[in-house]
Image (cartoon, rainbow, N blue to C red; front, side):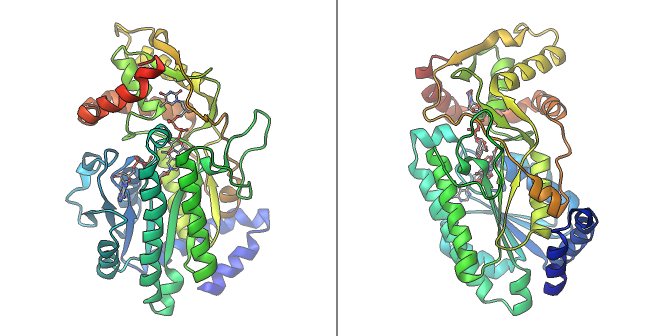
Length: 393
Ligand code: NAD
Ligand code: DAU
């Protein structure tokens, strides 16, 4: 099996052969995962993690075990539809609980682990960075240590099949100027926020565990996600929620910061693709080919709401846009060059920004109970702390 993978890796250098090989590689990868009967995910009750768990159960036949400590961002309601699914198990716990994690590896004997668990909001990292160090750096270290111990206990065949997939971000690369080339896998790290720095540190640890110990790691660096189940502290769900309630839409600075938006379902399919076919020790950038200025994103949301809620008293919703004090150290532009995953593994985003944003607004309109559930007490405290002094929402 290792020889087949090596042959494929060499052929991938040839762009003509790459596309056909992507299909073969997908089957090979699925076969390898199928040889084990479970994967573990961490942080599977959060935004991307829950979308991943749901997609996994629809698309794959292997059992999935979700380890999540249920912070403010973790929500069991995201996974209500599969709570009795025979191939799903939820384990409530912290990635820093080494005993728990070791016991889980022993009991589940996973073929892979996909590590989503993190503190993920840049603004929270500015107000309170310590939790980001504890979860994102120390937590990744704890998982790597326990994964290494488990991996060392496996027979050779199990060792070569095992994968540790680390889900990371494009923010580790820092900020681009208007005309700079998009981030590629060899762009130097230059994290600017405590969140980005904590993710960069975790990426470096993952890299070191491959190079030093041979642990078969994979890292994905992805751009901004959006879609169902995103906590309304992030730009897109916050704007939808505020607009529906006639509240100000707080745009930081001049609104011209650029992000490269990726529909969450496309991110989840990219992770599955890398898990099945990625080359151990490598990193893969994942993006949506959808660079947009923040103000344009907000105007698009407002236009979709005007159309879907024609009788809203808050129409035109764009009249709620309010420019507020900028985020400290606000990165100007992110853009992802994802030609590597496209060329070598045959993955491509399927959802356009316009289609994805329409789906997303419609999802939030249809899931106001979910929104009500996550915007109770502590959410209101956060909005108060975060925006009162900015002169916005
Ligand atoms: P999220 O904040 O919505 O969810 C994080 C999840 O991790 C929650 O379920 C939370 O309960 C869990 N968690 C936090 N600390 C934990 C701990 N110590 N032990 C166990 N579980 C813990 O995050 P998200 O937006 O879904 O992001 C998931 C991953 O993807 C993160 O690693 C993030 O850095 C990365 N990422 C996110 C984006 C994005 O746009 N959201 C883009 C690129 C990469
Ligand atoms: O690039 C990937 C990253 O994308 C992920 O690693 C992070 O986990 C994720 O949170 C996201 O980070 P951002 O800081 O880019 O996302 P956020 O939704 O917080 O902000 C997107 C842009 O919108 C950013 O330029 C700041 C701006 N913004 C955000 C909020 C919450 C506003 O103008 N107003 C707001 O109220």
